[in-house]
Length: 420
Image (tube, rainbow, N blue to C red; front, top):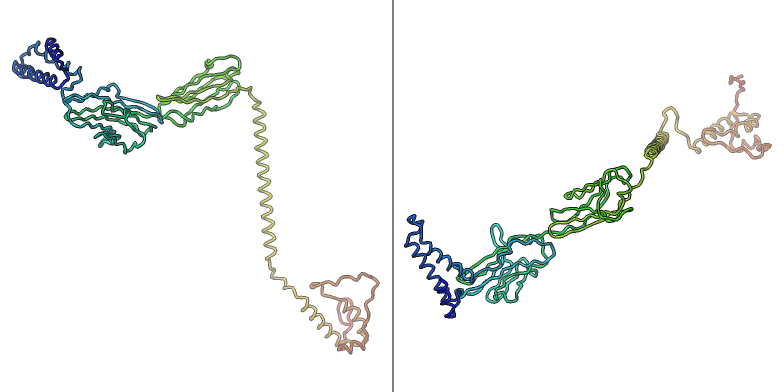
């Protein structure tokens, strides 16, 4: 076999050349036919010639080492990259380098697609010396080489998104040869918006809990607490009485003391990135809890009294308004309606006229004194004269006659009202 290889080399023909490749293929198939003729195990159970088998496999290995595919002339050489994990917003390069053989005589076509359960979504293509990239990743995908026909069909994907996660397939086709290569791409989100906070009391002797949580980020996220500053010593070690959970981000410190005071930092990380936050813990002496409880009780009682007072005032005010409304609209059936002043005055004057008609001139003087000074008390009251010694003028009998008065005889009465 070595002699045959040297003969080919002296003639200036490579094993991957047109004539050398075809010659080796003919020899391979000839040896396989000889193997079948000599009796293959699957045919008659006899063992084949071991020397013949070694010669056949040796020739097949030479072809593969020299880049000549036994099924087609195209060979994908970047087969090491099968899985890629990167962060959101970054750039990734998916490798697809290839080698062509002289047996490949057709036009070169390069195609990148995303494999879906029932279809293939195109990403970018190269055919007839032109690049086609107007697909779902327009503006974010490009070939690494300006000339993909030179043997490098690798692509760059910019500004990655979680939706870009999937299986990408590179297909290089130059008839009669066709080869494909697949790469699994996973896009993760870095932990962001990480917040540190203290839960519970910070008094001496209590259990202090520090918590750390990232609001955004692709699981699994791990949390790691460290102490960056100390009020007495310098170091990054946590106190001996503390324990942390990397899955939940909880740091628990039992029986806290002044030694626990300081600055604590939490680092949240996943497969593609990390984020951090810090918080200052200040452990203080306990306060007088009895006084605090008493103050709380007194404050609660005062609040209850104040609320009760407000309710009482509102109830009293509402009750007064209701009483005024009832009194204003109350009409008593046993009390006659009030008379107007004009009707009262007319009735009063008419009664006086009838009385005057029956009076004699001798009685007019006394009547004028006693009757004309009386006003019904239920209608109105005449204001008292300012001068108590003022004596109203008397009306003479002739004047009363001219005024149309009629003399009336009034019988005398005793003090008990009986007629004398």
